[in-house]
Image 1 (cartoon, helix red, strand yellow):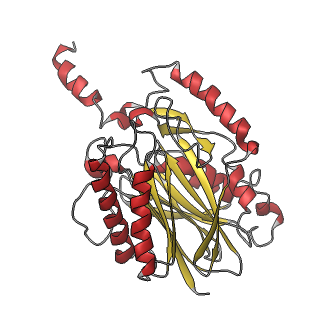
Image 2 (cartoon, helix red, strand yellow):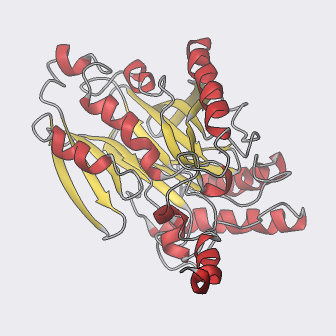
Image 3 (cartoon, helix red, strand yellow):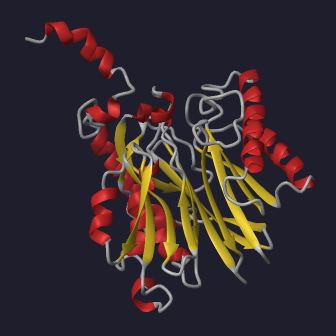
Length: 362
């Protein structure tokens, strides 16, 4: 079967009627681009979708992680979509494309990506998570619960293959450095970092035997561009079963709609709502923040599926709670804790307001 890479690459190319959804015309351009690539043998299989206003390219191939060919394919696809978005006069056309020239890798160019290379197993289920109106740290809490919390993941207690725990690679997005922490041994150290979701991000998870288990996109657009250009809207790839958490254990972590940064203008805290593909459109106050989970079976590199995993009444209570939390948070208006703190407002109008008023402070 050999080694397979699952690449999930996303960008905000433009939205219909504000910031809420990618129109079908843009997805069709992307599908045609990836179909041509598949016919040339550049990729094995693909699936195109959206989460809110983010265009999502899900691809399988044998070129490994950080492949210049795959990243260039995604970049060219996004540029084709950007051209179409501008023809249609879509809102924020090409927002996440911060450069017109591909430089060999998508790092620092705007699009986000999560890639996982692994030896394909006899049965290899993969869950792809896609979020809108939030930041990469939004996956910190659920991934901790999936891979380190026995109250969420029963396999940590009763599955001999999982009992020794997992290793987490945590990236400091400000310093650009990462550290690997083992759980359960270093659980408290891990929590001390990842609770600061705007700076310390779970980038990868491995089993203690080195099996790749999860990967998360870590792009912070404001740090790259030096201005507010939209929230980062992360993606993640999580493998399941056979020594890794069961699909149900992975999804269980999202039954609690935890608070994440983003929502309107990337400047507010709100609950992360698990939704179906059909409901992956952000409307109320450009939100609340959404997350979609698509389940695939990887079979000789082909993507069987997807199963729309949050399209299930079992998550209705989570969605109801999200709406209650949204009501409560919205009543705060421009006040914290709904609005983000001053450190997260650096790329909004707040600095200019302070500059304007500085001589009037006594």
